Image 1 (cartoon, rainbow over the protein chains, first blue to last red):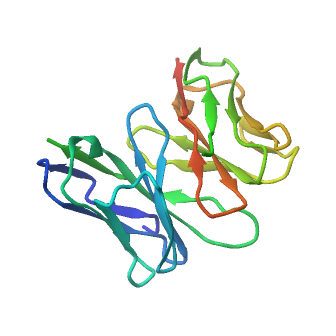
Image 2 (cartoon, rainbow over the protein chains, first blue to last red; image 1 turned 180 degrees about the vertical axis):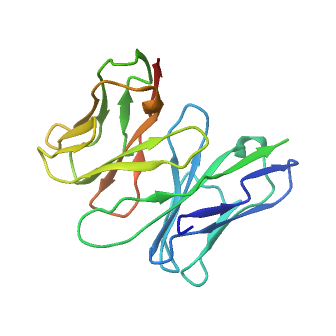
Image 3 (cartoon, helix red, strand yellow; image 1 turned 90 degrees about the vertical axis):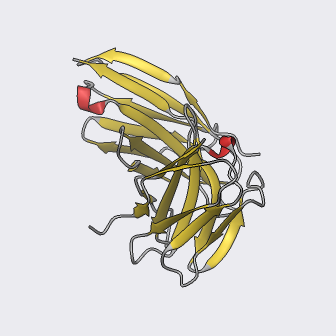
Length: 115
Length: 112
């Protein structure tokens, strides 16, 4: 399967714990995005990378959130000291850069529940 | 703050009905408008990427139009089928960066 894969698919954690999610993009894609989606809303932008460089981070993202893409391949998203408001679907997507705008390919997401 | 709005929020139609949704986005600094279909328990899947004012794109029974001067796009589904049931998302990209800004989606339910 050469699609975007995310791990884990589901995560239940206690409030205050740290969690880390992984995203493996399509191998030839140099852009990688993280989004968060809550019920009834569209995906909300969190951050994106071009290769290993983090080019933009949402101002809505608190300092408890951090993302890395150390070798320009897979990426991790860490949430420290989780809160109940962090419960959401976390989506990863990847795309190529090139002439025009290219479509993003999404993973199936990681559903986080903070209890 | 970039605002992308979709209407309606949800739509219930009978099999065979034709339907359309609206996406409105900022008309300044436009770069591209994407449409995605998101079925339950699956990944969002790209339908169209539109960049030029007046663009019309078609994939089977689904088509989309784009008006960048007034900041809207329409998605049309002709003869809806139950398998068209999904959330349809539009996403705007401006010429300042690489991120997509999504609307809240239109949830379509097609009853047999």
